Image (cartoon, rainbow, N blue to C red):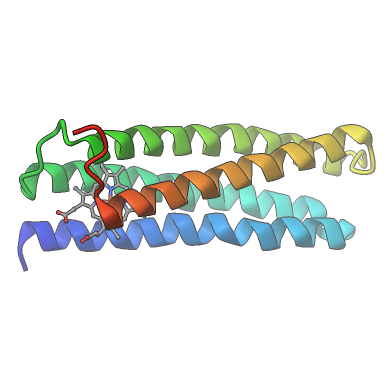
Length: 152
Ligand code: HEM
């Protein structure tokens, strides 16, 4: 196995872990709505997944992606790669802000304020951040698969 093959295997596996967990939040969040008595537990599980699974996975995606640029002899100035790095940073930023919203929801659920307007607005914001993450992920997959010339 070559270094490039090892890096690509790790790159794709970590992307699968990060993206798979992220998409599963649609189900977790739906369950948080449908089963109020387990709401705090469900939201806490999302928070833990985000911290211990998704964030490390995206860091590995970035590191192996940078390794692939180096080892697979891509120019660092290749536009689709520059855009990919930018989008991954945006994705990690969205992970950070969504985590803050989830944390607020957990606090509200824990003190019994999860039937409030504040909880509803946090829930709506969380869904927007989740959708934004999915859009960025689709854009990244497009860049990886099609490697479009863009402005280069
Ligand atoms: C969620 C984000 C990402 C996903 C799902 C993803 C997925 C993939 C996949 C499936 C491939 C294999 C494509 C092929 O062999 O034709 C690939 C290759 C590659 N990716 Fe990513 N990637 C992501 C982020 C990144 C980022 C941020 C970078 C830049 C740092 C990057 C750099 C690369 C490079 C250089 C290759 C090798 C392309 C080649 O030599 O054919 N990826 N990625």
